[in-house]
Image (tube, rainbow, N blue to C red; front, side, top):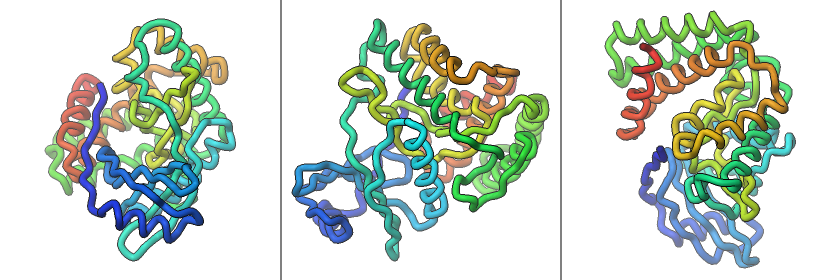
Amino acid sequence: MRYRRVVLASRTADEVVDLVGSVLADDVVGAEHLPTGFGNENWRLTLSSGARCVAKFGPLSSEAKWRSAQEAQRLAGAAGVPVARLVHFECFADSLLRVFEWVDGIAPAEIESTGAEAARFFSDLGRAVGALHSVEIHEFGSRLDGSAPSFRRWADYVDHRLRQIRARCRATDAFSDGDLDRICEAIQRRADLVSDAARPALCHRDLHGDNLLVGEDGGLAAMLDFDQAERWDSAADWCKLDWMVFPAFPTVCRESFAAAYRSMHPDAELWEERQTGVDLIEAFNGVPNAIAQRWGDFESVCRSRLAPLLS
């Protein structure tokens, strides 16, 4: 499954060229709107030097999240995860701007789903996620920059998050009060069960096909978009891979990923229970977010994922 949302441009190409050119040391000679994304407006830019980059515009309300994402990406790069270098970050009166270097590559969906090529990519991805989870993290929390509370126990952090998600559900009328109670109780029971086994890690939390690039050599060229990165149980980064990436490939690809990851992190205490727990949280959290942002298809994806997990 590959879910994409079309985002309309709110700026003209000339406006983007003038604005980004004013903050970079190089002139922008071309701008092409990239019509996919989740809440951000993206443009591919060509500079006078011939280099290419990506400009991402977002609302001022995303500043804390973007600064946290910047720290997450810095830590990931330092750990050896291939990422797109951040060139510029600026707050304007009406929006935020980030400029990243352009990384050549193709989406995983474009490689052969059988044979050595796919197995190589997923082995590479397993090592990259393993490196990401090797970043020294001691507590669970929602922000990498210290702008949100942190918790020593997974169950305490989950309790904190559930209160936030419940409030968004009520604001969007996502579930009845009875269903809200039932879902939250199921998630909290699971968190209490695995709390002693859960390990805090730097988690990307959005590893679907549009955020992964395959290089010419068949390996992982870049892991993109750290906007949802948080300090979660390490099981979290298997969630969207299982939702949106692995189903399009034979079982051996998931096995290649798992073998590479487990070579770096062999401890898998209560692993299935931990995976089910993060799947529940992500599916539950996705429903009010999709309603608020009018991501209709993604709301359906989350609801269809949530039902069997609860049963």
